[in-house]
Image (cartoon, rainbow, N blue to C red):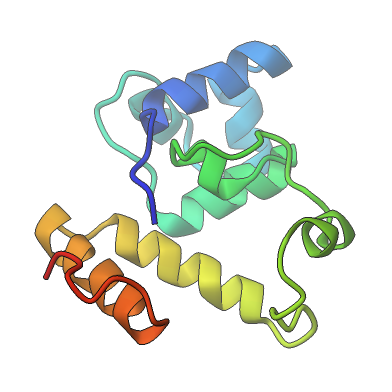
Length: 133
Protein backbone atom coordinates (compact mmCIF):
# COMPACT_ATOMS: atom_id res chain seq x y z
CA UNK A 1 0.00 0.00 0.00
CA UNK A 2 1.28 3.45 -0.75
CA UNK A 3 1.94 6.04 1.89
CA UNK A 4 -0.45 8.91 2.53
CA UNK A 5 0.40 11.95 0.42
CA UNK A 6 -1.44 14.35 2.70
CA UNK A 7 -2.20 14.67 6.40
CA UNK A 8 -5.52 13.94 8.05
CA UNK A 9 -5.57 17.53 9.34
CA UNK A 10 -5.26 19.02 5.86
CA UNK A 11 -7.84 16.68 4.35
CA UNK A 12 -10.27 17.30 7.21
CA UNK A 13 -9.87 21.06 6.83
CA UNK A 14 -10.33 20.72 3.06
CA UNK A 15 -13.59 18.84 3.67
CA UNK A 16 -14.79 21.57 6.02
CA UNK A 17 -13.91 24.32 3.53
CA UNK A 18 -15.48 22.59 0.52
CA UNK A 19 -18.72 21.89 2.34
CA UNK A 20 -18.77 25.16 4.30
CA UNK A 21 -18.86 23.35 7.64
CA UNK A 22 -18.11 24.49 11.17
CA UNK A 23 -16.88 22.29 13.99
CA UNK A 24 -20.36 22.48 15.51
CA UNK A 25 -21.90 21.16 12.26
CA UNK A 26 -19.63 18.12 12.24
CA UNK A 27 -20.19 17.53 15.95
CA UNK A 28 -23.96 17.61 15.51
CA UNK A 29 -23.92 15.25 12.53
CA UNK A 30 -21.37 12.73 13.84
CA UNK A 31 -21.74 12.83 17.61
CA UNK A 32 -18.02 13.63 17.98
CA UNK A 33 -17.50 16.37 20.56
CA UNK A 34 -16.89 19.90 19.34
CA UNK A 35 -13.64 20.05 21.33
CA UNK A 36 -12.37 16.90 19.59
CA UNK A 37 -13.32 18.35 16.19
CA UNK A 38 -11.39 21.50 17.11
CA UNK A 39 -8.34 19.36 17.95
CA UNK A 40 -8.61 17.71 14.51
CA UNK A 41 -8.79 21.13 12.84
CA UNK A 42 -5.67 22.37 14.62
CA UNK A 43 -3.72 19.13 14.19
CA UNK A 44 -3.48 18.46 17.91
CA UNK A 45 -4.79 14.92 17.42
CA UNK A 46 -5.69 12.68 14.50
CA UNK A 47 -8.96 10.85 14.28
CA UNK A 48 -9.03 7.18 15.13
CA UNK A 49 -10.51 4.66 12.73
CA UNK A 50 -14.03 4.75 14.17
CA UNK A 51 -14.17 8.56 13.99
CA UNK A 52 -12.80 8.58 10.44
CA UNK A 53 -15.66 6.30 9.41
CA UNK A 54 -18.23 8.50 11.18
CA UNK A 55 -16.97 11.61 9.37
CA UNK A 56 -16.58 9.84 6.02
CA UNK A 57 -20.08 8.37 6.16
CA UNK A 58 -21.66 11.62 7.33
CA UNK A 59 -20.23 13.56 4.38
CA UNK A 60 -20.01 10.81 1.74
CA UNK A 61 -16.24 10.92 1.39
CA UNK A 62 -13.83 8.04 1.04
CA UNK A 63 -12.21 7.21 4.41
CA UNK A 64 -8.89 6.58 2.63
CA UNK A 65 -9.06 10.10 1.15
CA UNK A 66 -9.70 11.53 4.59
CA UNK A 67 -6.64 9.68 5.88
CA UNK A 68 -4.52 11.34 3.17
CA UNK A 69 -4.30 8.66 0.48
CA UNK A 70 -4.33 9.44 -3.23
CA UNK A 71 -7.90 8.35 -3.94
CA UNK A 72 -10.96 10.30 -5.06
CA UNK A 73 -12.56 12.39 -2.32
CA UNK A 74 -16.09 11.23 -3.06
CA UNK A 75 -16.93 7.75 -1.84
CA UNK A 76 -17.54 5.57 -4.86
CA UNK A 77 -20.56 3.32 -5.00
CA UNK A 78 -20.01 -0.45 -4.89
CA UNK A 79 -21.06 -0.58 -8.55
CA UNK A 80 -18.43 1.99 -9.55
CA UNK A 81 -15.78 0.23 -7.48
CA UNK A 82 -16.67 -3.09 -9.01
CA UNK A 83 -16.42 -1.65 -12.51
CA UNK A 84 -13.09 -0.03 -11.66
CA UNK A 85 -11.30 -2.82 -9.82
CA UNK A 86 -10.69 -6.51 -10.37
CA UNK A 87 -13.64 -8.86 -10.42
CA UNK A 88 -11.57 -11.14 -8.16
CA UNK A 89 -12.94 -9.32 -5.13
CA UNK A 90 -16.10 -10.78 -3.64
CA UNK A 91 -18.19 -7.62 -3.22
CA UNK A 92 -21.04 -9.30 -1.38
CA UNK A 93 -19.39 -10.91 1.63
CA UNK A 94 -17.85 -7.94 3.43
CA UNK A 95 -14.42 -8.38 1.85
CA UNK A 96 -14.09 -4.68 1.04
CA UNK A 97 -14.85 -3.71 4.63
CA UNK A 98 -12.20 -6.17 5.85
CA UNK A 99 -9.70 -4.83 3.32
CA UNK A 100 -10.34 -1.26 4.51
CA UNK A 101 -9.89 -2.36 8.11
CA UNK A 102 -6.57 -3.99 7.21
CA UNK A 103 -5.51 -0.90 5.27
CA UNK A 104 -6.25 1.32 8.26
CA UNK A 105 -4.36 -0.98 10.60
CA UNK A 106 -1.43 -1.13 8.18
CA UNK A 107 -1.32 2.65 7.91
CA UNK A 108 -0.84 2.93 11.67
CA UNK A 109 2.22 0.66 11.80
CA UNK A 110 5.79 1.90 11.91
CA UNK A 111 7.27 2.27 8.42
CA UNK A 112 9.64 -0.68 8.80
CA UNK A 113 6.84 -3.03 9.91
CA UNK A 114 4.55 -1.79 7.14
CA UNK A 115 7.24 -2.36 4.49
CA UNK A 116 7.89 -5.86 5.86
CA UNK A 117 4.20 -6.79 5.62
CA UNK A 118 3.87 -5.26 2.14
CA UNK A 119 6.92 -7.26 1.04
CA UNK A 120 5.40 -10.46 2.41
CA UNK A 121 2.16 -9.78 0.53
CA UNK A 122 4.10 -9.12 -2.67
CA UNK A 123 6.06 -12.37 -2.29
CA UNK A 124 2.89 -14.37 -1.56
CA UNK A 125 1.37 -12.98 -4.76
CA UNK A 126 4.41 -13.95 -6.83
CA UNK A 127 5.96 -10.49 -6.75
CA UNK A 128 9.55 -9.50 -6.24
CA UNK A 129 11.25 -11.92 -3.85
CA UNK A 130 13.81 -9.24 -3.01
CA UNK A 131 11.17 -6.92 -1.60
CA UNK A 132 12.02 -5.12 1.63
CA UNK A 133 11.80 -7.23 4.76
